Amino acid sequence: MILLATAHFLIFAVGLVIASVLRHGAHYATPFASAEELRAFLALSPTAVWVSNFFLFGSAIPFGIFAVTTVSRLRFMGVRAAGTNIAFLGGLIATIALILSGSVGWILSEPDVLASAQIVKAVSFLNFLFGGVVFAVGFGLLAAGVSVTCYFMRLLPRWLVTFGMLLALTGEVSSLSLVAYPANFFIPITRYLGFAWMFSVAVALTRDHKGAQPVYSREAT
Image (cartoon, rainbow, N blue to C red; front, side):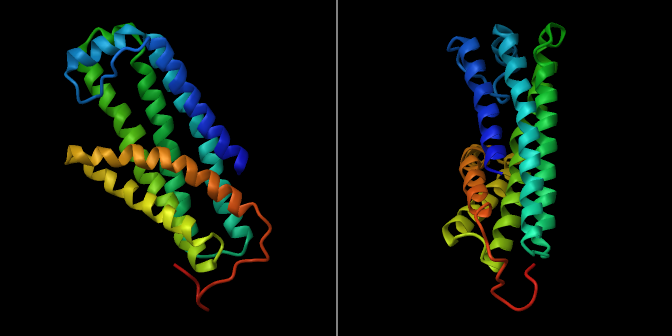
């Protein structure tokens, strides 16, 4: 699990660094910029576009395996609560979101696509929605499922459970960015603090445990 969390972070980070270098310091344009400004920005370095999205696509693989492995680890430790299913659903959504975001974003490196500002605008929004909003919501479900389950079964320290629940909250609140622009602020919070959460959970769950110890006698939900 530790290696998977590390691999996901490194692949994602390498993509950002290489793309930044290839852009030679050009001012980043978001999908909310004008269509022509966005087209001009992406046309500066198509190589940076396909490289960054290639690595984004690649980062989905270790992330998905991490999510599945985490759920498997909880079940191996005797957890049979619904929270593991929620975590699995969240991990699946987030993984598919990264795959789709990387695939859609790669299209923006094609010269024929870059020739049309309107197409660039539409594809950029799809890239943002999958890699931003949809991923954050999925990650929030993953963090919620793991954190709630581990709280009742006493498998994680309280600070890590609290951290996970905060990420779950920011992930779900980020969905409001579909109707309110300021909510976009919660997307990078979920994304970047999520790396630290993944690594912390991996370390905590791979330690030797004597078995799950529920707080209550009945199964946690």
